[in-house]
Image (cartoon, rainbow, N blue to C red):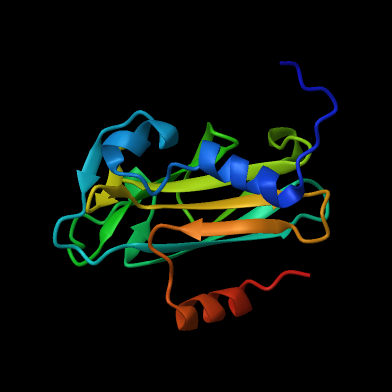
Length: 180
C-alpha cells in the first residue's frame, strides 16, 4: 500500500517521534546504543546527578542550550579534580537528531542551524565519565532531551530529563539564564 501526501496531525507526529526516537529512559542495556555505543557505569553510592535543558533561539544562527546540572561536576578530563570525592564528575555527550556532535565540558553550548533539519529536531545530552562510560542509576541512563521546532512560535515542543532538577533549583537556573 502506497501512501502519498499523508500529513499527520502535529500531536500524532510528536508521539510517533517520541516513541521511535526516544529510548533514553530505557534500561542501559537496551537504550545505551541510542545514546552512544559506550559501556555503562552505575553511579554507585554517589548522589544522583540531576539535569534540565533549556533552549533559546540564537539571534544569529540555530539555538543555544543551557544544561543545568546538580550533584555533578561537568568538566574536561584535564581539569578533573582527583581530590573531589563527594560528587560524580565527567563530561556530557551532545546528540542532535541521533548523531553525536560534540562533547560538552560546561553548561552552555551552541547548536548551529546546519546541524538542524527543517521541522522537529531532537537535542539529547548524556552524562558520561571521563572514560566515556554512560552514567546510569538503576540501569537507566542519566540523560536529558528536548524536541524543538524553529518554525514554530513555541520553540520547545517537549522537554525530558531522566533525573530532573527540583522546581526551586530549576526556577533559579532559568532566572539566571534568561534570554531575550
